[in-house]
Length: 389
Image 1 (cartoon, one colour):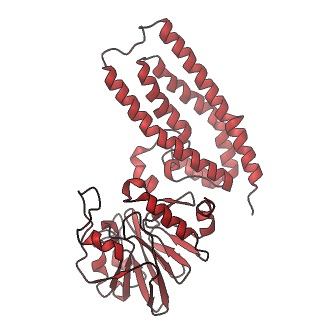
Image 2 (image 1 turned 30 degrees about the vertical axis):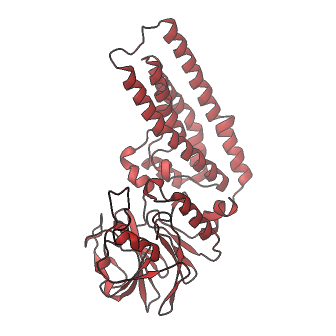
Image 3 (image 1 turned 120 degrees about the vertical axis):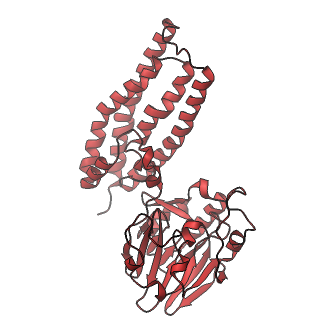
């Protein structure tokens, strides 16, 4: 059924501008004003003693530095979710259900208030949390009605406002479980990464090769869990040479290995992966270099190579049979939309943006598969903002 965008925009306006958001802000500001007046009228009764001011300032800066990215990311994600009529559950929304409120209560506001060196002002976030718990019931009731069991399951799994920092990895790396994705495509989960098998019943290829070691990281299964024997895989295509993508090459003893031409300097030690400290692992077997535009035929399977530098200089994406796009770490999927891979791990995020824009021009993609954030069959929707931007 086609979403009623007007209804979603109206609901957003009611909950944030005229409803919960505005009331939360006004009550919080009133509490802050009262606390400030009391602090200065009775100064220095509530002043924090015995803690160097430099320590308070440093703590405040750290809290704000943690909170501001949460606020920006949460705001963008929820705006897009409302426009699409979808539930945001990934990225910062996997840390808590209401990251914008949570950021204000636990990070940004306490960070600012530490500069005032007042015990009384530090009670303001407590008042904000109580206000949040009372007012948020309206918003959550709307979400339960709108999304049903999907939101109830999300509510059971994720805190309302306090971020589950111990789940940080799971919030940003959520590969598919081992198993079939669609016909011909099989995902293998190895810890926080997927590698993929593609088979048409006659021939089989692999895209990437997971972490080093025989057992699948974090799982019970080993080679027996695969839909085809590793010996039947004749070609392994590496999207890049990071250790979580090349680790199980020894599984595929009979396969020819393919690597992006720009990636050779990563595996021969010429270029460091991270600021001269870490280098990509060497590939101790013959491999064939491929460049953007190359087409490799494996029986009836056709693999088109697309150069997508950014994560690493030689990162490539692979369009198989003109319908399945494997992107490695060129991008991530969050709440169904394509974003650049996490900046901390990219060697050139600006180049990666250009790569994604080129990928967004593809028209016939039926399935997009990423290495760390799952797959989507709604490619046009996932890249729409890249086509329009």
